[in-house]
Length: 383
Ligand code: EPS
Image 1: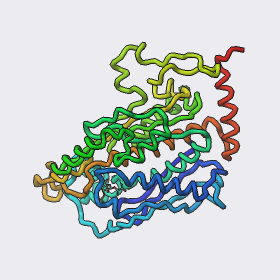
Image 2 (image 1 turned 180 degrees about the horizontal axis):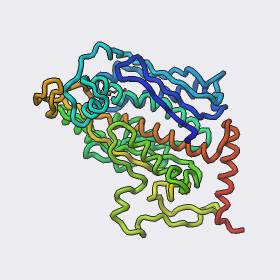
Image 3 (image 1 turned 180 degrees about the vertical axis):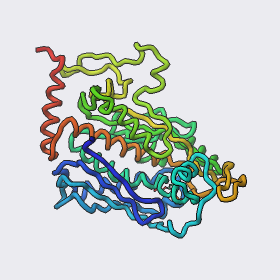
Image 4 (image 1 turned 90 degrees about the vertical axis):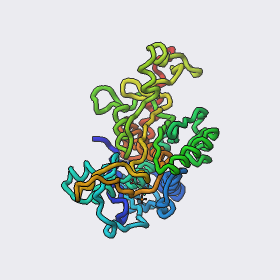
């Protein structure tokens, strides 16, 4: 049973989104600065060139309902609420022309409903606002334990970033200056052109998002049981994001095409006398555990399934061939998905780190991790 568990509720055009996060230790500051960082992450998720009009209607803000007292967590479940400005769900028309690529048709078949509206408002990626709110708190736990992370857009359609700085602070500065949340400014014109052309054609685009995390100590996760494996947990969390079709850890698919000598990260003496890796093709994970290098994961998002130039479908009320319903207006949501991926990774890493450290309070977790970091750094040191 993982320590940190996030459960969300809420439909896209319903009253509100709700998140309940259990397992956050006591003593995590939840002061104005902490709350501002939660709101900033929610605001980042609403960005990105290619989003539709809905993003100008919603102004996501998380209200904390429980688990916090006098500006600090108290160890009990943290409940969050994000109100929907557009809460028209009961007034929206029935949907009987399921969209290829969306949950519409399989959801109707699963629940035996004649109206895909019952399905699509929950299947909608609107739900990810609640996941980001929970992930933003996980990120605060990580930061307090010496771990920083950043999600960003690696590619949009066929346009790929190449100049991504190694320094995480620099990466974040560049990312936040980009309308695509992409740290390589040289690709902004090509990405803009790609979105404009797809919009013009009534079409949609996907992309690849990447998340990097620094400061994870070695030996977090595990190999003794399949459930402990950190790469498996990260992969599941990323594939649980709407529209994700593939995940890579480190060099991922490319590693399968190379020889071992070009894939494995040699172990060498570090400047401080400890051991480090000569490269980080593993993405900071070996044997289901962190290596102490930067954790690097990627997820591939398919193009949005609502096309203005609609694809073929069948009207489930009449059985007649029709064009799929046009419910949604975004061309591309891959920049926003990079924020959701950051949240998903934050939840997994914080969970695994707390599993390693134990601790009912942040002080206890920090003490235990300091001891673990010191012990791990003594391995292979000349005695
Ligand atoms: C979504 C469709 C669009 C997006 C929505 C997700 O909503 P609408 O139907 O209101 O235009 O804007 O995303 C969000 C509301 C959000 O917060 O990200 C979908 O079908 O998944």
